[in-house]
Image (cartoon, rainbow, N blue to C red; front, side, top):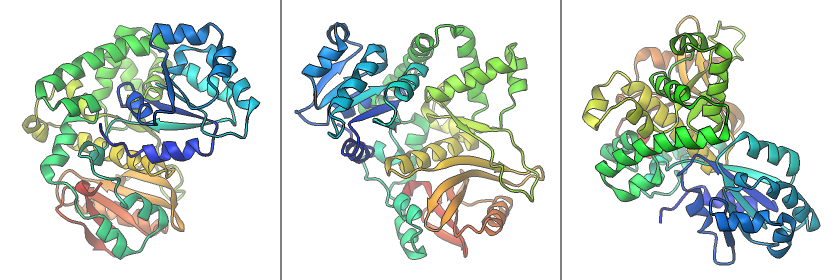
Length: 411
C-alpha cells in the first residue's frame, strides 16, 4: 500500500472538526486512504447498491445507529445524507472526528457542504501521486522551510536531489495515478489510461452534468490538451469547436471543478506594468496529457514540441500538491507583461515575512538569461526575499543573492 503525504493533514482535520470531506479526481486513491484509518472505522460505499439502500431507507436512523467513526465513500450519490448529517453533528457538536465523507467534486457536493454543513465540516483535496509519493519518499522538507522563511543554508540543504533524473522523467511521462504505478506495466498503463479517459469523461462527468453534450466535451478536452501550459483565448477555442464563448467558459469550469484542469489566473497586482490578464492552465496529470496527445514513449516526448509546457505543468502540479500535503495554503498565478517578461508561477501565501514566491520552470539544466532577468526584476520590484528556478540540474545552486536554482528531483 502506497504511503500518502496527505494522511497527516487528514488526521489533523479529524481532530478539529466533527466531519471531514475528502475530494479529488476519480482513482486518485481516496477509497484506499479511507481504509487506512483503522479497524474502529465503519465503511459504507454509496456505489454499492446494498450500502446505499441501507442509508437511504432512513438517513437519520442510519446516523443514530452509526454515531462515530463512520466513513462514507462517494457520498454525493446519497443526497439525503447531508441534511441528516447536519442533525447528527449538532446532536453532539463538540465531539470531533466522527464522520468522513469522500467524493469527486461536483456542484451537488459543493452545494450540500455550503448549505447543510457550513461551519461543521473541513474539506481536503487529494490528488494522484506526487513525484516523491510515486517513489515512496517522505514529503520534502523544502515546503515547510519555504513557508517559514528559513535561512539560505537550510534551503540549500533541503533542495538536494533525492531522485535520479530517470526517476523524475518516468513520473513525468507516466503521470501519477496509483493503479498504473502499482501494476508497473507499460501495456497496462496504456490500456488503463485509455479506458479511464473514456469512462471518466463520458460517464462520470456526464452523470454530474446531465445537460452536457458528452461528444463535444470530449472534443473540447482533446483541444484543451493542446493548449496545456498556454494562455487561453476562449474566443479562439469557441471558433475552433463551433460553440459560444459562454459554453467554453462553462466547460472550463467543469474541467477545473472535476480536477482534470488546473486554472491559473493572471497576476494583476503590478501597477507599474502592462500585464496580460488572460488566464492559463494545465491538464493536471501529465500521463493523461501525453495519452491525449498520442505521445507513446519518453524518446518521443523529449523531442515533442509540447515537452517544455508538459514539463512546466508537471512541476506546477508537484509544487502545489507538495504545499497542499504539507497543509500550507497557497494561491497560484502566472505573470506576463505585454513587453514579454514572463514568470511561470507566482505563489501567494505566507513565506516567512513575505507573501509572494515567484518560480520559473525550465526543462533544461540551466535557465536562459531572459527568464532569469524577469525573475530577478520581479523579486526586486515586489521585495521578495527569494525567487526559485526549478530545472533538471544535478544539485541546487545560488544564481545570485536572491535566486535559488533547485533540481526537480528534490521535490
